[in-house]
Length: 420
Image 1 (cartoon, helix red, strand yellow):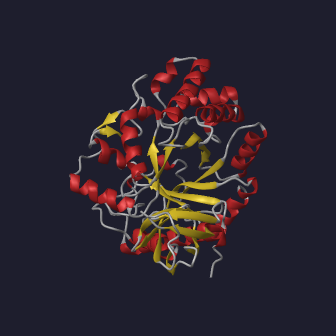
Image 2 (cartoon, rainbow, N blue to C red):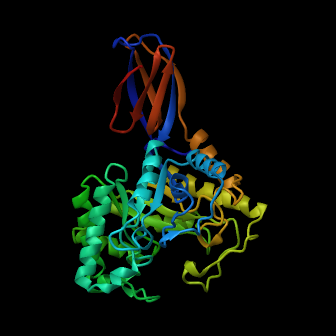
Image 3 (cartoon, rainbow, N blue to C red):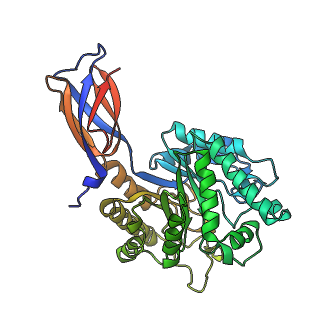
């Protein structure tokens, strides 16, 4: 049996009735309503749900490439998403967010973010600085102006969404950034000039100036020692990185426990929270090893089979169990695709193209909603108190004298709950 003490907390809960006095000898049910741990997924589908079918697609301008869906289908997919996840990533790729300078699609992203927040979903914006998917109009400026506009962009988004989105991938894929040669782009230019560490320090400084309480990630797919060395250099140079993002797109081979441990051994020593920011396990064949850029890969519509879907669920469960049960510094896992056929047309989602549930969905739901879930019944003592031990997160208390709620965390050893 795994030791899950790092995911749990204990608290003495005093329950007060509607009259403000302790509710003594009262039978109560305590039920967890959300996890402190962030079980996440790409939430791109929230955009057509909250804005209509023709919206920016994250990588281009206003786009009709997102096929109009029947409202009932959108509703069904959104309900299934909310039935599993408490954390969502929204696309802020600059090329799609602001294809014309000075006309960002702020309202569309705000609509999506506010909707998710209203459902008790924590939202992350991705990304603020990246060489890929950058705006073309930035190329018209010199390097000094490019950097100035990049920092202005960070200030605008982090300030403008503060309170709705307080978590950001500040800079994405820095290891390859100055040597990226697929095409010329503005961010590679300034990264060459400033250096990796210099650019990272600048963009994180801008993010913190706009929201000193924000959660700000550096994020990369390069799991070699190069990323470890970069983070070490950035921290030593004063870059205010407070969370490390690790991408785990497993199109060319599933990360077994040995691979997971090997990767984590190089990043846990920083002592910072670790997010698996872009996790992909595919219910299909592996991408050929000679493909060095996954953007060049493509899956056929019939790539998946029932056997491969079961394997996807098995691999996913193994990864979640290891990260959740054995690695306290891992505080979030985000699966990149909710539905099959999103990125690369891959069968990498939790639901199929027809919106039916895959084994991966039901397997993860069983872990989050059953195995890693706390629900207890108790009777208060003469002081109206009960002792609760459970998974960190939010809880509701129900009784015949009213209902209440509280948060269970390592910093709340005693809590007072007023019934309403």
